[in-house]
Structures are given as structure tokens and as C-alpha cells.
Length: 552
Image 1 (tube, rainbow, N blue to C red):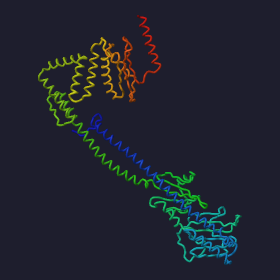
Image 2: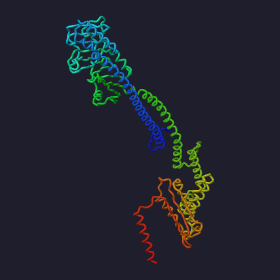
Image 3: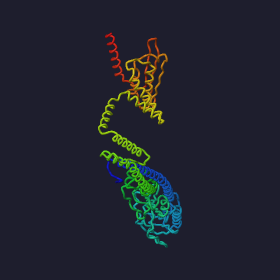
Image 4: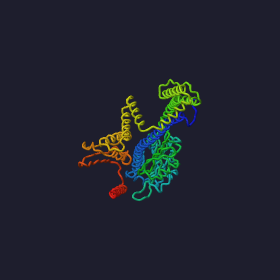
């Protein structure tokens, strides 16, 4: 016998399919939702942490740039230095004052490599480097200094360190990078230029500040000036180059001082460094894969575990399905043999569950049939069948009542008191409807019938309503037409009850108004009738009453 026969009409196929779907679909959906929520949480946490980190880095860089700016303003705050600009190097006092001021500026700024001064009127230059002041006269401004006609302060992007035309005792390394602050010295309050001060700043110091803000192995950090040139980057080859990429254009177009966004599976965070000498933008680039690496590892482990679990679940599902459906298929095969005329097939099962009971009941039935066939001839069996059909056609309410009583007794024997109670109530209702159809009954008898009816309805609606009755004892023996009140109670369940409410109720009251008048009231809190149908009903009843009076 084949274990799996993929027939969509088969219970086994449906059972296997739906059990596997019930396992795989919720598991997959929950895993996807969990992964998405985890990745979003990791991204949000990474953004918050890195924005705080960039904020601290911005404060450090702003402090450093402001310190550099204050030190460069010494050329104005020191009157002796300012006067020395009007004298040549031949004036020992003026030359010494300039050298001392340049030395003071270099010592005051962390990471300063050298300080260069050029005086326009005297065509003299001074370079303080390697703790020595070197001077030269009758020279032009060093040609590699940028045009500063439109700026009083300018921070030049990183470039190779040079000596401004001076010869040093210890030459600099060829690949050493610096960025330079230029300040135009003016004859205040006019804008006449007296000279230019240049301060070369070591990139190593800027790297120490910025290097604390990112992981070089996985992340990238850029500091770009207002023109888009890179002042700092984790990649030295990009120093002094202009930033390329649509992501940078998005930052400039946003107009915001700080923010973040995701582009091409990378998260970009930026913060503006605004000082009196700079308008830089610090940008951190983090690959999404780096942020989500822990989530991906966890997802891989979860997928692996879920995969193993699914294999076990599928195997268990198939086994259970085969275990349940194989005996059913066997029983179907036995039935087919019986249908073909083999009435003596062996129908036995060692199973203790419901399927085993089904085998035994079918075997017992076949034994009974075989005994009948052996005891009676086919003609007698045919007559018995005809008689049975005749009896079935003659089933009347008396038989149904007796059958209900028998079923109720059987339920009581099996300890099913609630079922016995309901069947007994139904039997009493049938008996009540069968007897004395034309004779009046007492209100007490009608009330008992109503109680049985309400008990069955409570079971049907799972106790979603409350039945209340307040019957005057003096009215219990009053004769009333049979089934007078019960239809009114039934009307509540057909039209008035709201199954969505838990406080439904129906109340029955009776009281004697006089010796010959008894008032019976049925009320409920159901939906009731709309005003228009209610008025139409009242008018119809009024017309019927008037017609009866006319006939009298």
C-alpha cells in the first residue's frame, strides 16, 4: 500500500497539507516580522548612538577650531607685533617681536607644525618651524598660497607639507599631509592688507579627534568644507578631493544642520560644524550589513533551528496522517468487498481509539447481517425490509416521544444529566403539544411548558439571556387557551434578541385584576419594532376588533 497518494480528494492529503501549512505559514510570518522588527530596532539604536557620537565629535572639533582662531588673532591683540609689521628685519626689535609671536601661536595650537608670515609692504617672509625662526627679504608671496582677496580667513583642504621656499635643517617627509589656516592681516579699521599669516596643522591631530568617531574596518567618516572638499577621511587618498556621490547632494539639498537617511544599503548621518572660521559637515557612513550583522546571524540560527523543527514536524505530520487514515482506507476496502458480495470478510482491529471502535461496530453490523441472511431467506428478508419501510412511514409523534424518553434514559445511565434534562424537556413539550389540543389548560401547565421551552433556548444561546417570571399564585389555576403565551416568548428569540449582548432578558408576569379578569404580561429588552411597522400592526388589530364587533 502506498504511503502517500497525492489525491486532493483524500482526507490524508488534506490533513497533511493543512497541518504543514498551519505550521509553516505562521512560523514563517512570525520569523519575518521578528526579523523586520529586530532590524528596525538595531537601525534606530545605531542612529541614536552614532548621532550622539557625532555630536560629541562636533563639540571637540568646534573647540579646536575656535582655539586655532583665537590664537591667530594674536596678530591684532599684540600691539608690539602689529607695529613690527611696519619695520624690516634689519630692526632687531621688530624682527624679534615677530619671531616671538609666531612661536607663541605655534605653541598655543595643538598639532601646529609651522607658522608662516608674509609682510606685503616689506616683501619679507618669516617661517617658524622646528623651533627656529627663518627669515628672508625681497621675496614675493609664496605662489602656492591660494588667492585670498575675497576672504580674511580661509582653511585650505589637506595638501602636502611644504616649507614656503625656505631651506630646513631637517627636511619634511614627502607624503606628510597638513591643512592650513590663512588669515589676512589688515590695517584696521581699513581693509588694507598688511600681510598674510599661515598656520600649518598636522592631520595626525585631526585624525586623533575624528578617529574616535568611527570603526575604520567597517565604517567611513568624512569631514567636508563648505565647498565640498574633504578635510578629513578615513581613506587618505580622498584628502583634499571633492566629495562625489548623490548622497552628498541629498545632504546639501536638505538644508538641515543634522540628520540621517538610508541610501544604497548604507546609513548616512551628518552634523554641521559651524564656527567663526569654518562651515564644515561631518558625515558618517555605516553599511546596513554591518549594523544588521548580529540580526543576520540570529536569523540564520533561527532559520536553521526552524528548518530542523519543520522537518521533524512534517515527518510527524505525515506519520500521524498515515496512522489515522490507513485504517479508514482499510475499512473502505473491506466495505468494497462487502459491496461486491463477500459477506464473510474478516473485520477486526487492535486499535483502542475511535477508528478501532468503528471497525468493531462495522464488524458487529456485518455479523448481524450475516445472521439475518442465514436465518431468513431472501424473500423473507425482502418482506422484512418492506415491513420496516412501512413502519418507518408510520412513525408518529407517539413514537418520537417514546424514542426521546429512551434516549434520555440512556443519557442518564451514562452520567449525562444535562443531556437527559434537555431531552426530557423536549419530550414534555412534544407530549404537551400532542394531548388536549382543543381543551383549555391552566396557567400553571402553560408555565411549565414555557419553562421547558426556555431551558432548550438557554442551551441554544449559551445562557445569553435571563428569564424572569413573577406569577400571582391566585392565577395559576386559571384556564387559558393552550399555547397562548408560548408564541409570545418564542417571538423574542425570533425577532427581538440580540446575540451580541449579554444582558438580554424576558419577563413573564400575571396578576388578577378582578374576579373575572387576569392580566398576563410578556416583556423583554430586545430590538423591538420600528415605529412605522408598529403603528401598522396596531391599526390592523384595531380594524379586526371593529370587524368582530360588527359581526356580533
